[in-house]
Image (tube, rainbow, N blue to C red):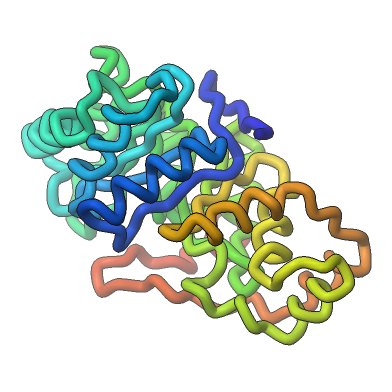
Amino acid sequence: MELITAGGMRMPKLGLGTWRLKGTECTEAVLGALQRGYRHIDTAQMYGNEDAVGEALAATRVARADIHLTTKVWWENLAPDAMRRAMDNSLTQLKTSYVDLYLIHWPAPDMDLPAALGQLVKFQEQGLARHIGVSNFPAALLKRAVEEIRAPICCNQVEYHVLRDQSAVLSYLRAHGMALTAYCPLAQGRLAEHPALDAIARKHNATPAQVALKWLLDQDGVAAIPKAGRATSQQANLDALALVLDDADRAAIAALPKTERFVNPGFAPAWDVPAEGRAA
């Protein structure tokens, strides 16, 4: 599995997303993924499944040191004391003494960003989080975190797929040595029967989802965490790693509209505030 190196972090490019997986289903999905060779597991406080992920981590024969584990603190808990309680609870649920990457899940409209990022730094200094980062930060907010507050974040997790442009965020991350983790990389299942992707897939004896996933994984500094509860889906995602897209494939994907956003809750940040003259 190819690794992304960013800020001292080494993160496998392909991970297992666990949003909407709960209980035994989640535990079995994580165990199965680890058996198949996945070494990157993504969860969050808000998912309500850290306990199920923790059961899998406790049961697997894969050494904890060989697993990259990401979790996230919810936007309503960004005061330092609330963040500490969230971290303690996450570690308890996950049955581990540390996470490899701890993220602010969403920026809060009224957050004290310096205080929240400062608490992330404390977690890193205390060894509770090996690395720290953010999620759903547009380019302008990234710029504030990195250039004004000078937080040592190494990753931004955002919605990214063949129908969503993230060039401004990606350019900023690359310029500052940070990684992008793509959530909803298959647009919540909407790409399974996409005509343009289907044409590419037929050429390579693959599926449209595999084409969409490999398009992301081919990009420098980009990881992807598709949710995959079933063994067949997990294996299909792994098999996508062997797919070789050509220039014509990439041109066809580049021609697709890139304006679709499928995750946009009421508390989301202002996505299109420019940073360095580019739309976010």
